[in-house]
Every structure is written in structure tokens, then in C-alpha cells.
Length: 314
Image 1: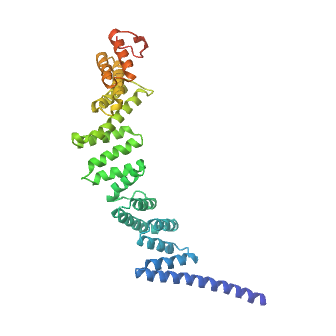
Image 2: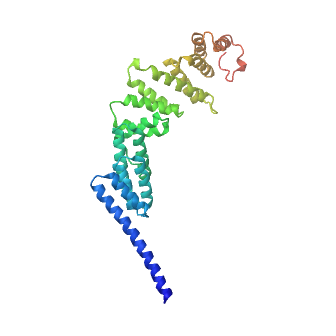
């Protein structure tokens, strides 16, 4: 009898503590809701976090914390709590994305690109593929300026669909982003497009990039494992583009020399001689001039042709 009475008291005590704890949590949440409704977000946050510390693991509570942080403009804290809430209940995904995208737009208006990007990144973790609207260009430039060129490119593409007053600048930045990740094929397309959009006196910088990428691609083609007629034809076209824009100036002698070699390989002997002759004007005291003049003489007088892979000229 005494044992049963003692057991009953223990159970009753535990139930009382549990009920008391639950009531305390509910009281904290209720006080938080009242403070939130009154616009006192600091007080609301304190009550909601008190409920969490007292043991509330209800996603409704952590969701309240996240939403309050969002109302206070605290992106990282809101994001962290929304991720926690979402992991417990997918129902909160829509509210989370709505709050985070609102924070992102506010940050964009305040020119706080780090906060904007942080909010968008968390929103995308919750709802992959959501649109970013008019924030695309800001996001692109944020990632570009921080050296994350691959992440910038999709946003640049989206920005070009929506923006009309700064398309040339965007196209140029797209070219730069591709060039930075080593994709000169796509970079060259963007640079050439930009060049067509601007006036002749605005082409100096882009010509440098066009020449750089064209020359690089030409050399890559020539050093490739498969060098057929198509590859040679494209390499010739690329190196001709580099000498046509005349930039960068420090590679012009090499570009003319490469052009001469390609023409020689294709049997265009007179054109090859002309290209080699141009080297002397571009590199009057450099190491290439002797090689170019030797090639010129070999074609003209037919000496030493056995050393060439393609014995076309002579």
C-alpha cells in the first residue's frame, strides 16, 4: 500500500512538472505573440527564445523566432531558424521563402549585396529554382566582384532578359566572367557582341580581350591532338582576328608568326611570306625576327624544307 502510494506521488509529481513546463512554454509564446502584434519585436523574440530554451521543439515556435528575426532585418539569424524549422516541417517553406525574398529585396534597395545574396541563397536551398526578378543584375555583380564568376553567369543571363538600358555593359561583364573561368570560346562571343554595340572609340579595352582570347584559342587548336583542315582554318581565322584588332600589342609579332606558320602548313606560300615579313615591323629587336626571316628565306629559296612537317611550300 505504501509502495503504491509513493509511486502515485512520483507520477503525479512528474505530471505536474511536465504540465507546469508546458504551461510556462505556452505562456511565453502567448506573451511573445502579444508583443509581436504590438510591434515590439525585441520583446517578442525574447519570449519566443525563452520558450525554445524551456524545451519547446515545436516548429511553430522556431518559425516564430525566424519570422521575428526577418521583421527585424536580421538575415542570417532568420535564415538559420527557417532552415531548422523547414527541416522539421515543410509547411513553413512558403513563409520562409516569402520572408527571405522580402529581406533580399530590402537589402538590394539599401545596396547591401552581401545580405541580399545571403537571403537569396537560403531561399534557394528551401525552394530551388525560384526566380529572383530584378535582383538578377545585382546578384551577378555581387558574385563577379567577389571572384565567383561561375555563380555570376546565370544571373547575368537572366539580367539581359530584363534590363534594356545597360545591355552593352552587361554583355561586356559576361565576357569578362567567361574569360576569368578560362572559357575563351564564350568570352569571345560576348566581346564581339559588345564591340558591335559600341562606337569605335569605345572599343580599345574590348579589342585587347578579343585579341587575347582569339590568340589563345588559335594556339590551343594548333597544339591539340587532332589538327585537321577544319582546325587549321579556324586557327587561321582566330589569329587573323588578333592581328586585325591589333591588340594586345605585345603579342602582335607572335600572332603574325603564327599566321605565317599556319599559312605555310596549308600551302599558301606567298601569304606566309607576307606574314613572316610583318614580324620585322612588330618585333624589330626581338627574338622572333630571326626565325621569321629564316622561314621567309626558306620558302623563297627552297632551303631546309625537309625540316617542316608539311612540305607544302618550295
